[in-house]
Image 1 (cartoon, helix red, strand yellow):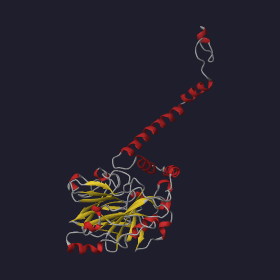
Image 2 (spheres, one colour):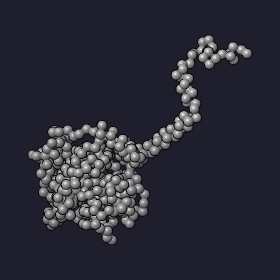
Image 3 (spheres, rainbow, N blue to C red):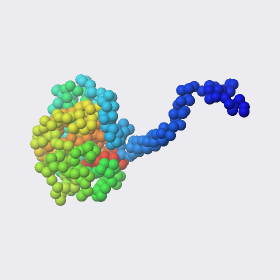
Image 4 (tube, helix red, strand yellow):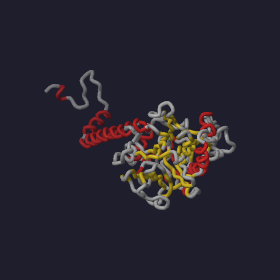
Length: 404
């Protein structure tokens, strides 16, 4: 028998590198059957994880990479981990300072210039043109609280907007307030491609605004939380996802294009005239008053905020005593400030819609140059995302506003 055949495991040929004991132990460990099985299972898990996350973050329908990743994690029971990560990265709003953009009303959007025309119609609209709003941050900046005309119908103001600071402490942050006249506009609820997803939603149940349906489009804005987090239901043309819960804040769309906000089962209920209902949490303005509930359980009772901070992007919708629909949104808002903005704009009933920058938006559409394909514009200059978001398939439900 040769020397090569009889040498021990510790012996090496001349010139061969000597294998370290730690490396040999590792190789032996990796050869064990349980370890190989565990490795195979881990490999499968990594492949599945990569595929699942990849699908979530590349799916059409808007939202930033981080917002899609966070939603995927929450949908897979990793909400606590997401909240911890957001808490570690959360930056509270800065105090003091001035807005980053001008609040003055451009000449072409002034209320006085837009109201010229049919004097009979002008007098009819007078009661629905709200007075200027005082600043909630103290002395008003030039243009702050002054209404500007975003959209006209038959030459008359149909959608008005103003910019308003909501806090003297966080004086550099600006919210937008919108007033929509239901006598000249109509409201339409659109389902999202993922929430509520495919269904028998009827002729206008597209998860986007197709080119053929952009004539007469005036505005779009976001709906509420994901339906499984809204603690309520979604109803459109006879089809539902979730359950319409009594006591919930509800945005009700009627077949004649009008809309109302109130408590389901008390103020509003199902009738043959109802086309759609979108519920989200409880009212934050009720009969003109702000309930104490807006100050309770803010971190998760009113949505998973970025980092659990009270002051984040929020949006809300309300109804005035004379039937106008008002929409408000902006950065660095807590729930009470959102409710105060709605109340300040004249809302007697109001509800929170969505939160965080990826999901709060208001777009208006300039149709002067091309009525069949109007140009979308973000109302707030610091709003996240493209103004064309609803011109492509969108994952969340939203509201479209059309001329009558």
